[in-house]
Image (cartoon, rainbow, N blue to C red; front, side, top):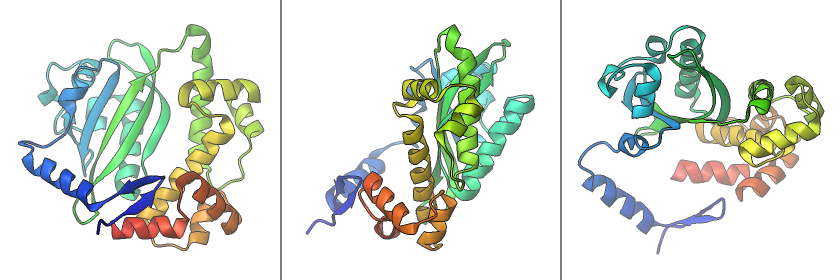
Length: 261
């Protein structure tokens, strides 16, 4: 009988895992997918090892860094590739993902390019695990934002809001507080976040809390009550209700599923 698990409404059975194993066994070289992202000019793609060194990049990153070939980036860290504060911030992000396994989803950032231009982008980073579940690297993308000129000043405020949310998930954050940090009204903050992520400020905050909770449940063995507190829920019952509504499983069921998988 197929081994079936329910996660976020998707059933996964043994035949799916068998198909994945057969496919990976047939691949003739590591499946980094940099060739796919070579054809996407507004997305930077990268894979890094446990020490934060590039092991795969796409052509967009090559152009953005001013080098001539992918090989010029391989084996180098962000600090070596990007000068000043940008390289330091990317290295800090990488170290955090590699240390605690928490992914970065839709982080709004201002990147400086070799020609002196500034560009806003959304960044995603995910840890890469070996067969034993140890972190061996990370993969990520940064997608350019083509914001109209009258919205670019709002992006700096949104970046501050997003950084504040992820730095203070254990606090009882309020939309009015976030709007003040952004220098926007609550209505305008909702409009900007909807344009970027398709969710309101309140929904973005809930999503950030649930994503952080998922990461903690996967990577730690702490009590559910502690996970709830770390993610801004003073009441474990309220956390469990919200988690089940968002994920389709209780926190305990989610943890057991990932331990089994």
